[in-house]
Length: 199
Picture 1 (cartoon, rainbow, N blue to C red):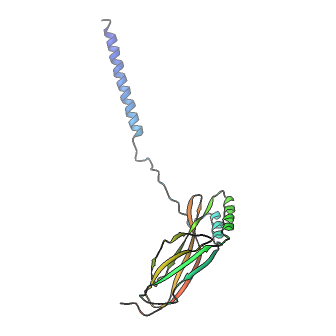
Picture 2 (picture 1 turned 30 degrees about the vertical axis):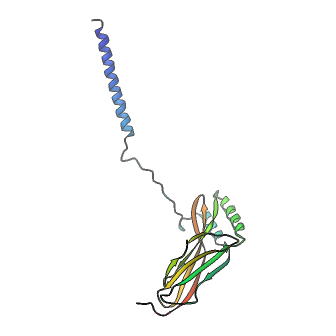
Picture 3 (picture 1 turned 45 degrees about the vertical axis):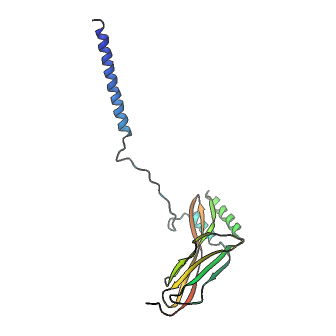
């Protein structure tokens, strides 16, 4: 008789331990269970546009506009017949004042605690509604102070008349690690197109 209470107490303690373990497991599973209200983290790529561009970046844009190019050479045919293919070429190199410009931009960036780096690449874009334009190389290329970089295209006129080609030179730079661009030069060339397109 004296041993019976000991067995009862031991069994009761084991049952209580099982209940506590079950409750702890339940609460653990509930705490780690994903809920519909939990928000997912989304990475957003910030694109800097002209409308929301900060003031200090506008100042840098103005400085970028003063970038000088040395020996910009544009080769286009003075006249061409419709449906004939011709080559257009642009070659340029940086002027020696690029180092001074880099220093001016760095000083402007320091005023706001930003880090600005002018990339050693540029792009030249060619457009013209009256032409079929085929690039013969990458739009973005490295540029140098002591040698020319060339861009080439093949153009094919689609209609006769005085037709215009539009060139845009774009420089790239980084602000606090984010890449952005600025058009530093625009120019047009007119080609006299003779004949009519083939039907």
